[in-house]
Amino acid sequence: MLVSGEETRNDDIDLASFLRTIYPGPLVRDEPFIINRHFEINSPKEPGRLQVLSIPERTKDEPGGQDTDGAPGPVVLTKDGQIKGVTVDKAHIFYGVSEDCLYLNIFVPLDVNFPSPLQSPLPVMVWIHGGDFIAGSASKPLYDGRFISNFTNTIVVGMEYRLGAFGFLVSGKDPHTSAAGNYGILDQQAAFLWVQRNIAVFGGDPSKVTIFGESAGAQSVSLHLMTPSSKPLFEQAVLQSLPFSIPLKTRHDALKLGRDFSKQTNCSMSDFVCLLSLSPQTVLAAQMKTTSKIVNPFRFLEVFETWGPHIDGELIKEQTITAFQKGHWQKEKPLLLGTTSEEGVIFVYGVFNKPVSAVEATVYITAIFKQHTLRVLHKYLPLFSVADRRDMLAQIVTDYVFLCPSRRSARAGIKMGSEVWMYVFDHVASDHRVWSGLTFCYQHACHGAELPFLFDSAPVANFTMLPQEKLLSNRMLCYWGAFAHTGDPSSRARQKTFCREQRLPVWPRYSDTSGWLVMNLTVRSHAQVGTRNHICDFWDQLGIY
Image 1 (cartoon, rainbow, N blue to C red):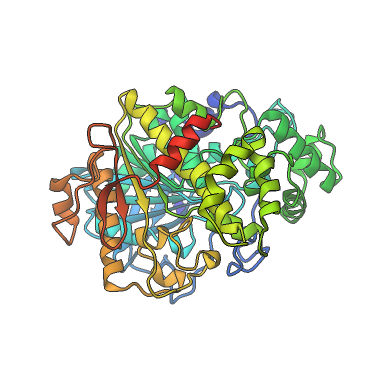
Image 2 (cartoon, rainbow, N blue to C red):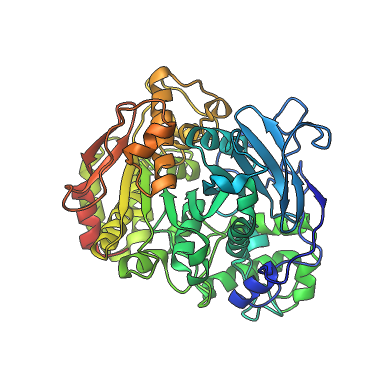
């Protein structure tokens, strides 16, 4: 809640001016797009459906639901004004900081001394949520940062950024007269800059910022690792389930999507005034109709990410997988990089709600892999004997989109001197529980399954952790926290300062000297050789990512 303003000092960095030096043109509208706080396209209980959510209104029974004017809580003076937080169980929370639609939620450990925060500044962890760049919110209860902040003794910042057509519409190249796209990525960059300018008054250390994200959030993190203008804004990164092989759009494809969008709104592609005058509801309706179309039927993977960043030649200059293999990223920054063991389940079962025959599977595999189809079928068909080939397609998505390109990128970075720690989240629920939002996963460790463990938000996912699962959650928080403090998830000295258990399995750095060991995050976490190395060798040799 912004209480009062403060005149900006002359030596402060002006946010808008900074961003325009990176990407000229209108960064935000004079009247920003604002989504009604209760507006939804579909129920959040329906998996695979588009959801457009803003900061939720909180009831008096929820943290932050009180009138913060009268509630106990800290007050800090940022460079943009005075902000009041609320003190709840486990943390001080500052909800809804920033300007219209670009909100930040800031979680601060209870023992931070706000009158003298600079005496012992804490590391900062900035979370970027996933959702295919069309859905999700930093304010989803699944991402309640109190638990990470309290357990790891860090400042946790969650950010909103523009999604779908609001953040990624492209109608032309000139940013002064058309929608030039990639605004959602610039929103994230603006949040990083805000953290640099203001986090010290919350008790955070701006020189020790870790950015971390899952799925589209991990894609965002990877783009900032590739972007020179983001380099001074963070020190290290965590990439959770980065879909390396889903290509960023070319300008041509982004313009085609923009043209389809414009047709739905009755605006001309060249009529920027018309596009800017559209109501949020009109934009969302056009976005949904456009999203239902595959941009290119011979690039089938685009069905998983219709909207999102594109290669504009300025902010983003090449495909992520290309940049990481060629070393065109900030290789000096430590990375924590990993996937879940069955990433593809939620995607394949989300698209195909009926069994897929071998013939149908061959058609889809051909659409993706073209001349490599026979080799892919020869590799995978013998591994799956059931008539329904969805499990086979899910495994191909897991290996080709997530696991194997991550392994290849990590190994390429290590050859160039990077420090990387790799993991696979491999926990399988033993009692056949179904988690809300992961309906297709059943007992699989599929895409996003690690999030309730990392954020200790199992009740939100409609399950109660068993004691051994709580141990897994604690261990993950220990590793992520140690990484935020030291750049090494296995730092024993740092773990002992905030972890409840002292005997954590050692997580070796990923390298040929350690035997390419990865941390298997399950109820009996342990370092191991990658279980699918032979499959990843196949994909590496195929040379198609």
